[in-house]
Amino acid sequence: MLFGTAGVASTAIFEHDALRLTIMPGQTLIAQKVYALDFEVTNPGAKQPAPELRIKASGTAVFESERLAVPHLPVTCVINGSDVMLIEIPSFVIKAIAQSIPLA
Image 1 (tube, one colour):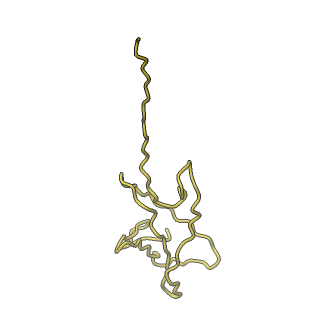
Image 2 (cartoon, rainbow, N blue to C red; image 1 turned 135 degrees about the vertical axis):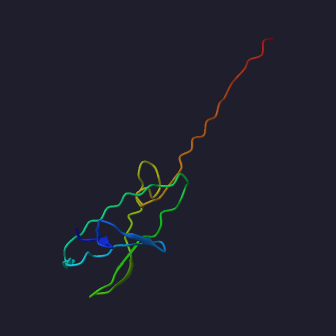
């Protein structure tokens, strides 16, 4: 395992609105190699805008905080639905119309 905390692989620490991943002892990241990370996130039951996602690194090389690109594409009629962690609560408007013809 590449990442872990306190000697436990595949763990991370969430602190001050940031998720900290620590390289396990004896592991290194290789330049020009693509690393894919995935997380399970439980969305709240309330509407929320997509948060700004940033990444930074420190160690033998330092990479300052950089904003991650977001495509802002619609998904199933939701504006910017491709934005990570954007929560829209669906609502439906129901209307009724009636007609009556009084008898003469």
